[in-house]
Image (cartoon, rainbow, N blue to C red; front, side, top):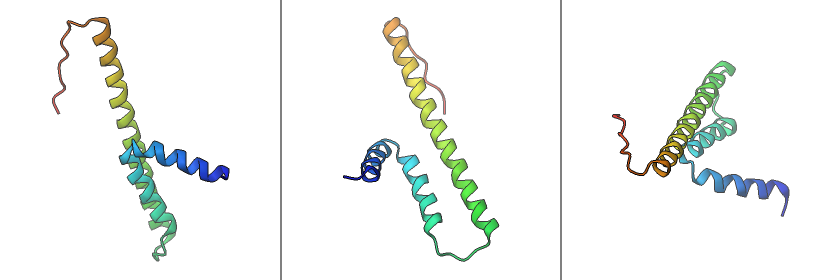
Amino acid sequence: MSINKERAKKLTRRLESHPEMLERFESILDLAESDEIGSFDEVEQRLVEEVRRLGGDTLEGWLERREEQVSESLREEKPGVQQREKKR
């Protein structure tokens, strides 16, 4: 199996656990493969928006995982302590 196929399979497996990132990558690929006629500036603007969303989704997912790690660590250190839930 070629190196690129193996990398693609690994990336696919990783993206399965990050559906929000998968959606962003699909949007970026759709834009890259589009035959839509538009100006360079229009395409650039759409790409910038998608990359910003990708960054936001990535940071949000990272923060949620980090909060869970810290919470788990605290529960292990002090099992009797109750955790307050954030209001959303």
